[in-house]
Length: 224
Image (tube, rainbow, N blue to C red):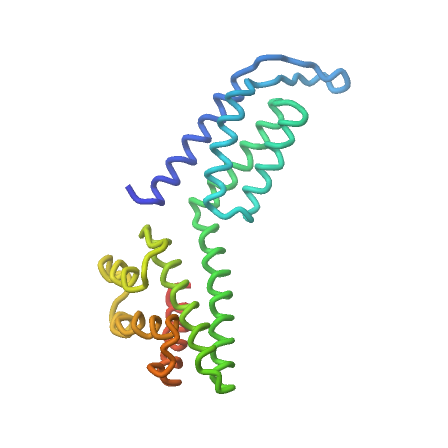
């Protein structure tokens, strides 16, 4: 089962558990102004469910709006009571995250932002190369290269954290995620990356660094 399928399944499980939490009425209250009935839910069930949702949303990045909004409602419940209205707000955030995840909007945004950041690295590398700072340009370009490859691999369900670039490249090729001229150029990148990251500056030419920058720029256009 792929990572995307597992995520979708988990969203669905937690959405159903939200209904179970809402059904766990332990204490009812009536708003004397509006006449509306409120009730508290089982605190243990709510806390277990909320912790699981926070864990799921955190995988989308701690700075994503869904994580922040859910955490705000969750913490509000800890301070003011586990009322059904708060649980409903929490559930609404979960459902919004689920819909956007299934629509692909979350990862398309992350993908776009990642491309912009890595593109900035390429621009800095090109500027350094123009100024004659080949070694600085090499480090910047290789950092962008490695990050781009790992982001692309993770997005396609590959476990590449803490892996060497050659292993990442092999994983991408084994899944046919790179092909054609891009695949041939990619074969040369791990060696150039190792030269840069191990300070073997005499083995790197300005043309080599230019080829790394060019590859990353094309890779970003193709996949980000």
